Amino acid sequence: MKLHYFLFILCLAILPGCGQKTTGRLLVFGDSISYGAYTSASYPKLIAENFGHELENHSVSSTTLADEAQIGAIRATKFLAGDKIIFSPGINDALLHRSDPTYLASYEQLLIEVLDLFENSGGIAFVGEPLHVLGKGISPENTAQLVQLNEDGEVYANILRRVIVKKAYQHVHLIESRDQFHPSPDLMHDGVHPNDRGHRELFDIFRKTMERVLK
Image (tube, rainbow, N blue to C red; front, top):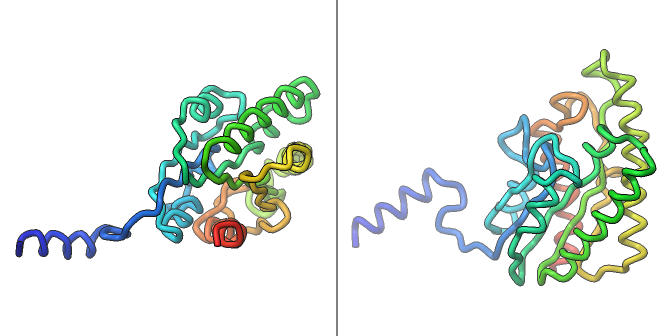
């Protein structure tokens, strides 16, 4: 008995969240930003800790929605009733495919497929818009590319908004992260990826909507 008690106290001391009862899974799909590149405290990790969820982050850096590593992971997931889902699509699609009409058409169909899966999964999904990136201040040599990425990112954000409004989902909720997250040098590791402070900002943006929906 004393050994069990000692191990429990040791667990509390060295492992964040140890001994706390989880309230289901937090499934995350996306790219390097939702994966948490260049930070030790990604916004999905902060969300999981705040709401007491068990984090399963399936995000893969540098992937688009059309890549098997992203769409395949979503299709293969066995969703459970009560799952909470974070999905942040679009930024790599905008970077690699820009506003190519053929790709945009296929992207919208894939997006509908994914959001329909979330709607019927038995869980609740929170979908973030592609973020604005920092067009200047950190990477001046890439300024033109980043400015273009912001323009193309708005195209993908509009597709997401249009689909969610048209489909009138009950269990898929839009996070208006594009207008609420304002990249600045103190929030960004580089032109695209948030740093620790940036992820804290994103956490607060997601948290507000999640608290409203889950109350």
